[in-house]
Length: 357
Image (cartoon, rainbow, N blue to C red; front, side, top):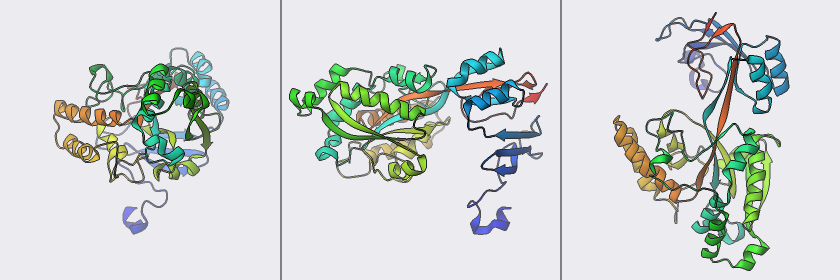
């Protein structure tokens, strides 16, 4: 298939892959069908045919599951979790997700005479955010407050917050106001409100990112920082974020199990993936050292050395007050009595070890 496609390979849907399944049928509107690959290096999967169905309405997914039309739901909607877990009885679990939501500040923004270029203002924004309230609003309380780029329990080389190797920003409105005074603003300025631009994010108007944005907007107002909220479709917002056309944003990244994933957010070669531009004059980050640390991290398989390099890297990023972890999304998983479950993964749809009873 790759040979037949030639240079056009990758520009349209195809069946080529490297996993235990290949795509036998694909319809972007309805879903995808998979067939077990007999030549898979780890051995053929127990379940030979899989169909993933796209159901856009959460309540419809619950009904389909209760009617026995679905055998497995991964990343179940938190708003419907009580109904799903009750219908599943013992066949349900809620795990900490391996994906991250971050609050990003464009230090190059021109808003209000470049106010976001002031590190004290950026720090004040981070201290003003009540992550607990953000988590409750976005995930109905099922999520987890985040300080790490990748949860350290899922990644041996991810610097753990408990080790104290990097700066963290806990909710502290008094500290936020103190930093604004340190930035050169007066008490009157704070009372009148300091414009920090627009808080931009993507997804549904009632989605988790939009809910997070509303809470953060209120948090900032409490310390004298004024911002508008902008929520639109990802197709509209994403190109703007990746071209640094925003002031403040809420961004989502799908975690993996290697801290080198941070490279796409901090390396100058990651244009089109990053949302904060560090490789620039007057950068708040010693990006050359950070890029060196990215290289050092992948140059060795010594876990302790990698952890040392990545701790310094993440500490530098946090000191720049440009990227702040907000929360890890919860991953609700339910399954039917017809399925034997193997290892439940916090990210992606890992069903290779599943089998029919």
